[in-house]
Amino acid sequence: KAGVTQTPRYLIKTRGQQVTLSCSPISGHRSVSWYQQTPGQGLQFLFEYFSETQRNKGNFPGRFSGRQFSNSRSEMNVSTLELGDSALYLCASSLERGSEAFFGQGTRLTVV
Amino acid sequence: AQSVAQPEDQVNVAEGNPLTVKCTYSVSGNPYLFWYVQYPNRGLQFLLKYITGDNLVKGSYGFEAEFNKSQTSFHLKKPSALVSDSALYFCAVRDVNTGFQKLVFGTGTRLLVSP
Image (tube, rainbow over all chains, first blue to last red; front, side, top):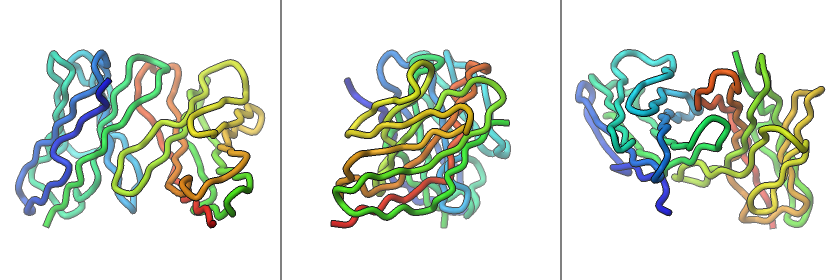
């Protein structure tokens, strides 16, 4: 069974640009969550999608958005990039309440 | 609000010795507790979870964790450490009652196993 796939693995963007990251969950998993990992703030929850609906959102500005498609694939978008958005962005998928989340390898975003 | 604390930034242990990585949690209801490991430039790998039942949970790669409700702790343990266990370990909690999959992570503990 294929794991969680995130693309691209690495990105370099300029301040002010926008970026879209993609996540393909494990087959059959309907819940997809996104996290930001930085040395200073650690792992922080961005949002969770289930059956194409955002059902939970972390404390991030509106520049961070996401969506989920009918095949459970998810994308997150960051507009008007800032230097502080440089981070490892992790996607996780899970089956249902109580089950463990499986993480992708992450997308390393560098904003210059 | 739910939270977890990992009081040690780094744990050093010699290969072959037992290891413990500490985690305490705070949650209003019943917790789902997890341990993950992260190797450099990689995502998080699931090690084990506590949902309900036995307080001693066995997981991947010989790791186990003990759930202690009175001390609100969920310490990760391994009887005999390997150099390859050196990595960053995260404890996480999920609120049972919300039904959501949001995980709240600790700050992580770096485990260094010396040969």
